[in-house]
Length: 397
Image (cartoon, rainbow, N blue to C red):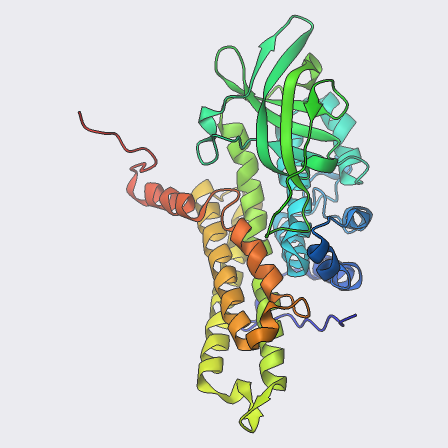
């Protein structure tokens, strides 16, 4: 079993911008990842299996709803702490970070922001402890980047709502106890519903044959005349803005998480380049290898400063959706490029499970698409700076 020798790159001394609490949170998450994740993750990736035994540990390090107040069972940490935990988890594997990210930003966050007091008391403490696991149903077979066109609907039947439709590409779906489902009512307004496993007509078939996020459980949500109690409607969620706020929280976590993956491939490639000898010297002494390493650490450094500043804005309540989009897009892109360059430094060894690089690369091919594609986030920035939305092209008649 390979030893986890990861050394945190910090070229611009960004640690000096962190509080002691931030460092304690990071150290706890990092130690857990080194002890519990890296020794087993390659085996689970090869098997395309989610390591369910890690759920208890994720809850113990505060990875489920880090910013949820203590009164609802959360740790009550700030947004930089949340980002740091996501960074450390994705340094281990994107699939593990996805599990925690969905639980935090896409399940606990909407209940906290849009739920009733009864819903918060009923679900949040059990979600924080990992007793309950959740998933988030927004994406549909025919509607990904355009969620406003969703076809899943529910009707008022007096004593309950009747829910019909389907969602796909849903992380955590195969084992989730509850699902936060976004659907249109009879007036066409988008609302949020808490759907519980065991409700008749609700099923979660698993998605197989993935080359990416192989340690993450992915599935569909099928609703066939599901009777949902009226008390399971999120009372403060009205319109598309509500699920998009959840996605903003998730995208923020991804911006930090992908930085962790970039750090891991850089650290792996640097260590390998210093140890691998060719033509009588370490390959780290050759110009082209130094170019790759220098460019990777430069991009990591810029990304570190980007998410630290964004975390500060999140803590102050000033971060905009467009700023979050920029960080998600940039950091995922630089992480994927870092993985590709690092793979070349390792040569043929880079494609094996003896090193984490190819696994990170395959994972990042999904991360660059989910929670908003690379191109959609570019257009969000474009709209923000020009004031002109480019999402719809109107044909001339």
